Image (tube, rainbow, N blue to C red; front, side):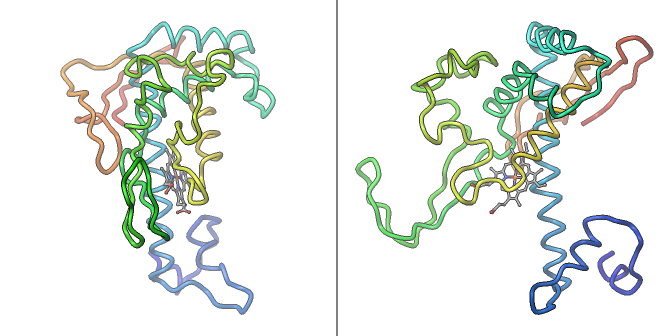
Length: 244
Ligand code: HEM
């Protein structure tokens, strides 16, 4: 596709077009190899992560109807037929806690965060030599009992302001990594999740189909072993079956 598009530029306004047209101050463009790397980066970093998060959202809400009910009550309070606006999204504070808890319990990226050690240093009594690769563990961090009581419990309200106060340690919540190489798409991903979740909760009901292996596989991204088979139906009409 890259070769084709280079020879026959398309009128489609898409990411590939932007990458093919991008140039630096001296007019240099990206090589085909660099364009390919960037497209793959977008697909892997931007698409696979988000779909993993949305799959976990559907799974956890199906398994915790009381949370779904509370999230729906919030939507009802805001007005189910009201359009989503930046303002109304900000008011969805309970939904925000639900999404935070989904990313805590089932972070899409489980164990790939790595950093190069620039200078030898000591941490917890261990010498970490310069030049080594140090890996940070997202899942294990999110299960730290010093920060998250009953870490195995799906409990969105643990992020309610009155409970979360004083409990957060720096870097104790890291679904998007941390520091200067933190996820570049973090705010966009949070927005996508919120819009998707709000519309789903407002308009659909769903249930998990029987006979599927829900055991969590974490590589390359977190997902249930068989994918997730779900039956959705519009809250007032017919049903459709999706497989994530
Ligand atoms: C729920 C969704 C997402 C999760 C959980 C997630 C998570 C992560 C994590 C853990 C990293 C590694 C950060 C580090 O090394 O400390 C990362 C990097 C990155 N993410 Fe995301 N991500 C998500 C969505 C997105 C989206 C939607 C985009 C783009 C549209 C995106 C673009 C990137 C890029 C470009 C990097 C590399 C940043 C760098 O190395 O400087 N991500 N993401």
